[in-house]
Amino acid sequence: MRYLAPTTLDDAIQLLSGDPGDCRVLAGGTDLLVRLRSGDAEPDSILDIKRIEDLRQITKEDGGWLIGAAVSSAEMNEHAELKAAYPGVCEAADLIGSTQIQGRCTLAGNLCNASPAADSVPAMVAVRAVARVAGPNGTRDVAVEDIPTGPGKTSLEKGEFVASIFLPAKPDRSGDAYLRFIPRTEMDIAVVGCGLSLTLDNDGTCTDARVALGAVGPKVMLVDAAAEALIGTKLDDAAMQALSKACSDAATPIADKRGTVEFRTHVAGVLARRAAAIAKTRAEG
Amino acid sequence: MSNIHVTTKINGDPTEYLCAPDETLLDVLRDRLGMTGSKEGCGTGDCGACSVTINGRLVCSCLVLGAEAEGAEIETIEGMADGDQLHPLQQKFIEHAALQCGICTPGILVAAKSLLEKNPDPTEEEARYWLAGNLCRCTGYDKIIRAVLDTAADLRKAS
Ligand SMILES: Cc1cc2nc3c(=O)[nH]c(=O)nc-3n(C[C@H](O)[C@H](O)[C@H](O)COP(=O)(O)OP(=O)(O)OC[C@H]3O[C@@H](n4cnc5c(N)ncnc54)[C@H](O)[C@@H]3O)c2cc1C
Ligand code: FES
Ligand code: FES
Image (cartoon, rainbow over all chains, first blue to last red; front, top):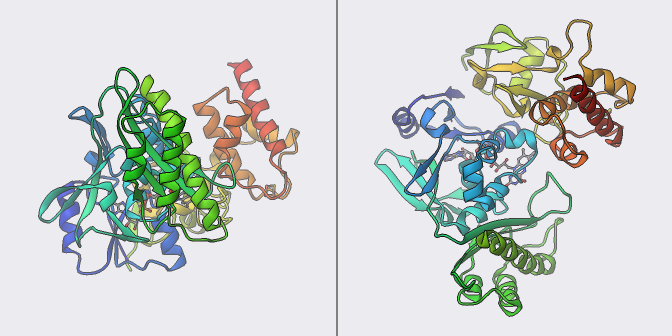
């Protein structure tokens, strides 16, 4: 195995697209190193992107935020302005593993690892996050929900990688939230996760919403019917119940030792309702 | 597989080593540099026994490649005591009997030190969350948390 550590984006693109073998991007390594050890991954080379200064930055762009693919969850949560703008995305990243894991893990790594239970992914989808994909043919913007295609699989072409995650500007009176259910209080994989964002007008009517579920299907699930249940309402009890029902109806979970189909289906609705209440409070400011 | 030459600082001392591209920092510390204070409990990021800091950031050294440490400053448990003078956390762990078999202790001390540097006045809840990635199969955690909070109180008084 070769260890490559380019310092510019161009070099990284050249190395990745020029590599004849299996070359894996290394961000925080909290998934990749576990796979190397288990023999689950046996790459010919590893491309460490953490020495590329541009990818280590959190910057403002067009009223939104650009988060480099080498930025750790801890760095996001130490960034007061980012946290104030996107509390839901930041709290999701802050749920990944332990303090030690958070010191290393990245949004892009969480996304490209393509686990159906990845915590930050529903939170990103809820705020219309975009993956900025770099490759030999230039850069393209891809909606976050279109990156994973199934467990462990992504739509990235050979030679492509995610250079940054863009969280677009959101209107005033918007709020986002992420909740997950795990049997413990820390350090466990989501049984269900729900990311939700919404926007209110001046008299409290919901004008826009996005609801995304994790761990209840082979990949993150954007539930349009759940958003429709909220839009046009004042988020009263009836709207919240309709939201819950839409999420439970959309869930297509598997049963495993962490939860049964019935439990996951039910919890998807409960989490959505609770996330909506938090997002509403945040939108009201 | 050719070895990679790495230049770092470990506990303040400039250190150079050669490592294989897929070798973890934990293996480098233990097997190449003879620094066996950092322990391997799981090798998969779950137990925290291998905790070190890199450029001030708490990480699991089993999930870091040795090659990644180029140019970095690493702190390990070996750098915690000042000669024979134990760090206040180490002293309190003895007073509170916050260890039994001791395999988790180096990682917990490194993690606790990192907590107190960031937050000199943690609540019990904050301390428990911060240390959630450090597993201990012996103590039941209570004595550990008490030792950490007691150290924090002493250090605040002293400063
Ligand atoms: C103890 C422990 C607890 C964990 N707990 C959680 C949890 O609670 N919730 C959760 O969601 N996850 C959890 N994880 C999984 C993991 O920490 C996350 O998925 C993390 O976000 C991965 O990010 P990373 O930067 O470490 O990725 P890496 O390990 O560096 O990479 C992961 C995968 O994505 C690819 N990749 C990385 N970056 C890019 C990029 N920019 N472009 C293209 N491909 C890329 C890599 O090649 C690799 O295949 C846990 C892991 C451990 C070890
Ligand atoms: S040995 Fe590194 S976390 Fe267990
Ligand atoms: S003292 Fe034995 S594992 Fe903690």
